[in-house]
Image (cartoon, rainbow over all chains, first blue to last red; front, side, top):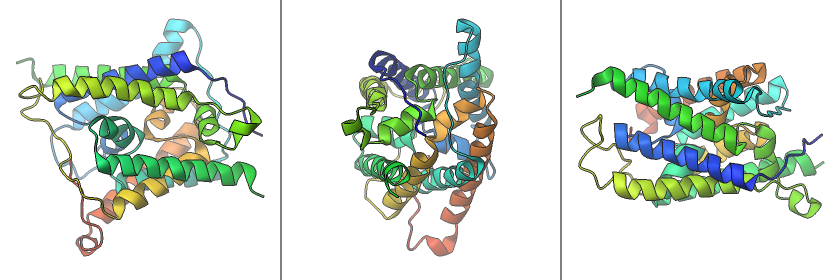
Length: 143
Length: 158
């Protein structure tokens, strides 16, 4: 069964702008690309620099966001996770491996890289979009 | 001038803004992501184009913001900008995103929303993030094998 979702152009544009604001702030303050996969993998040793505390803080901020929304609005937004545990493990391994192997994910390549007009990021973004679209097609419409 | 603690506080705030962006945009809901990736749904009328609007909003702000920021001499809390210098394409810039994209299409989570999903208190997110961390650490370990450097030149460490 596929969960139906509602098209939310205004909220999505506004939320996207907040993501962009965060990327610009991180660059202005720390000089770093806001790439979540790069930040996440560097939580683990070997540590190549002294930015560990900042990375922990960034990830803590990501995790705190739904809690802040809950406190501010009194309810959690909808989140529908339909994948079972086996699919979640497989998907998690692929997402983790692929994003680090390709030096970035939706944020590092998709947002920051495209904003820097990087050819590598354009190739990466087109590739993961195509792979994601193909995967959903196979899962939902083949067989 | 303000020192390390202030920098860490700012990074928490930036992560929070990023996470609020993910929640408000709807990208913390894997169902919305999967319904975007489902192009066959366009003719069925159940396609959700929201993700394209998230990317448009994010890139518009980041593109304009970077124009200004990268003209500055240095970041506020660091001595230089750490930008990827590598420009040539290599096998990893295709194979990595291809593998990532398959996982993204299976569960609807990419790394940012998956971490934010932990704050929803969902056990599914914990399972996904644990597996994702294993995949990430393994990819970095593999990328750092000297024997691999011939076929897969390392990218910038930024």
